[in-house]
Image (cartoon, rainbow, N blue to C red; front, top):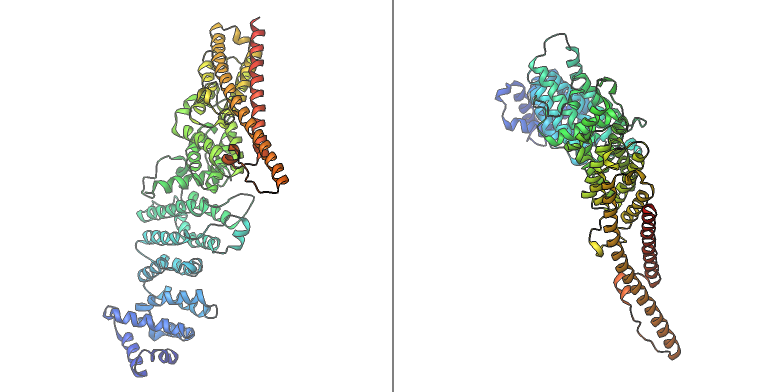
Length: 597
């Protein structure tokens, strides 16, 4: 007590005044204490800690005669005590003991208010350290509450998650192990913090009618699980073969959802819960998408998922999550979306997805987003995964659905690489149909409108043949195959005439485009070679005369910035490509004449 008085004297005139002040606090009822008293008590405690008197402060807090003061105003010391623990290891034990005493002595409502204010005002540089110190004591305080415990728990969890969401999510296993910003440690501490509240619900399971407070507690736990699924779990790299800290947090979150009987309902139901647990639609979509990934890809709590759902039904449910994930620009979201799509598709039989599914928004949006990954994503490994999935998706569609999907892609992709890949698949379907699998979509009249989308030059004769080279070459190979192998098509006069008409119109336009392109590139190549000869002649003349003569820049070098050798290589390569296209058109005409004869 003497040590505390010595510290107080720096704020008060005499030791007697300090003793009188503390004695007045002891003698006063709580309702008689003024805001000035609270501020003086708070300043006194902070000063003691600043000057290294943590042991004296602890003794004051524990002394029997001071318990009235501590009960009334002890909560004012929390911030200073927690900050002292975060900053200094030497006084940690004294401060921890003091906080423990305060959480058991002071009013839990006042303590909770102080703690929530402390969480709200956390130093950005000490978020994890402060939360780790505070969590065990916050748990004690919330458990002591007799009224509105669930609501107070919800306020606490919301405040805690708000601060944790400011911390960067580690990407690699090494970053998780190092846990430089403390996120992983906080997630582990949060699961311990929640355990008694989850146990409280599960202990009443089926034994008595659920009270309103229990239902509210369930809602608050559900809210926290959904927030955690969005951040950090949706951002994290999670794999069942990599038992990291965040993986264990994911295990705990899914276990809580199962324990409070919100799984699998939260995953299967398309609309937000009616209990008001979610008002943010984006949060709900992100959370459910992450949960779907954890359940169906990483197999967390999958044993609790009803086995009665067919692979087709699960694919329909998951396509909503896949569509949502693939609209993101973040790698972690895209990886989860691609993995979920692959897992869902592989459980469905080939050639089984009906055309009716293509009318669903998610079944339209998912493949379209996949197409955007193929064309726009800067990450090669995601593009490669996307291409594999693109083919798997095609393989799962039935014949009519494939036909509709191909038409949709040819109309909307606006990318020659995607279009050439679709044309390759059209050829495969025609070949499959010719091998004892006849159908009207690839071996009947419905083939004509599909081929009309294939054999078209977007800008007529002025189409850039090099830019569209992949699509044109794939289309010519398809034409050659159809006229070489299409014996069954020739038996259908109307179909065969339609094919011949499409071929004639396409090849006619292509020949004009080839002629124009070859003439242009030949003239450019000729001008380039003449320019090189001129520069060589100037160099020789300059060497003879010994005078500096300014070089003449040829048009191609000035425009493109390429070296003359590189320009020549490009131009010659283009001419070779045109020759190859021309040879294919000639071969197609020869095959046509042979079949007609």
